[in-house]
Image: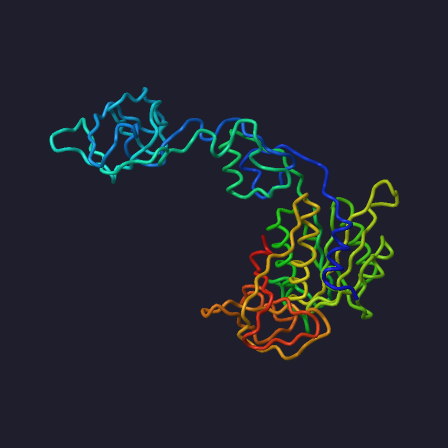
Length: 408
């Protein structure tokens, strides 16, 4: 069996970014991936401006606290004043361009109006040159890169693009993923349960994961535990998709048809990984047609147990999709944290334990680490990456991977 890192390296070595791009309006680009660098059309800010309500001044006029200046002009945001003359100040409001001659802004809390002199201001601090002034282009310069290709577009990136003057962005097309779920025991919520049956939780978990990554996800439903049905589902899924994901049917029982079906419709490169939960994991490709020129759709088969399915998606499918999207694939961010629990059942496989941050700065362990107990993932804040054959005692430092970093 491959280690988790060997399996991930194997998957990533095959993934190639999609090549089709499209131009979309700004508000339609949320959750998309930039296909090319975005250059600013303007300087941001376009002029030197104030970051505070207060008074624009010349520091040469204020040699000591208590200096009094004549208020010569008033500049709200959206207006441009005239050049500041010696011995004068301009009443100015946040975001307004500072007038020529200004080399500092004094916030209004450090000023006062002399009694009976509404056209004067008393400056009660000696200002430093440049204080409270935002310089032209300090955020973005005309023609300079504002956002780089491969960036996943969140709300803040849309704000940057808008401030750069863009209305449309050139983005990668969405990665198209088909998902189906095997198991005669499965029913959808809302349907009556079959004798000995269970509700299909993996469908909603995995489709939500795909959508959170910005994929175009197609739900092909529950496929019966038959070889012919599995092969037919693979052929249908391969036609218009970049990736096929299945859940269940990847073990070695008589009712597990994924391996022979994928082998018949394409090829299978990987079968088992030395991790817990999630040992059975299949990777390969399915032909789009009988014509080699039509290419293949990638295939990843996940275990049927809900925690195994969720964890293997986070560890292997997510980075594979990131690479298909043209995004940078980074090592999952982890932290050394104190274990406030004992784990005395060392396994020869790399284990991923569901844990929760506690109020004492440590980690608590969910009491039931079964791969069928999905509430452990809902209760938990992340995973402890426990190496093979390693015990954990309370007080030990362990490698903690927050779910937040695995779901971004």
